[in-house]
Length: 200
Image 1 (tube, rainbow, N blue to C red):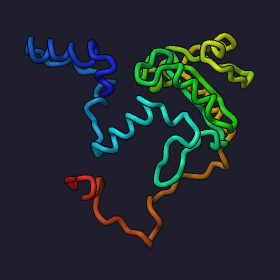
Image 2: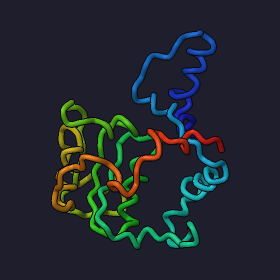
Image 3: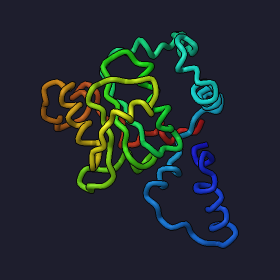
Image 4: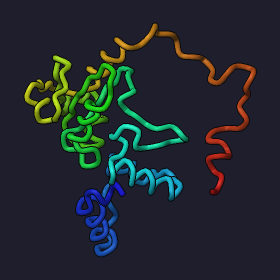
């Protein structure tokens, strides 16, 4: 589904190169994730695409019911850090920004350069790309209006996210030396576990 959002780049060039010309595709780490598929039940996937993409019902108060509960994003009042990539073809920047109009808690919105994956995984050490922030915590109705008051900063947005997380985090504690709940729950078998290998 995601590949067909950009079929010329992510589908047909591989058909021409691989099938017609017999070439092996060059290694490309970002697109390696595309082959790491998750098995989803067909009816669940169809419901998800229809309700959240095609009909955009998640944005409407109480229009979606999950496990017997009506969903109203406006009741979410916890702090939210919202990120959008400027050239994202899967979550267009206007759609990512629209989240600011749905939640009711304190928010911070940041726009990163590049697309769906490259903008997100750009670490500070690389000193690549840039990000935009607006320091007045105002969220006008549209992304274009927000961008008029935003400032571009060089480098990764991760440093801003790190600072935001620290303001909302509790006291730092040392990582546990062993995982699980001590002697009460022992590991049944080595990872990934038999349930991962079970056939539907």
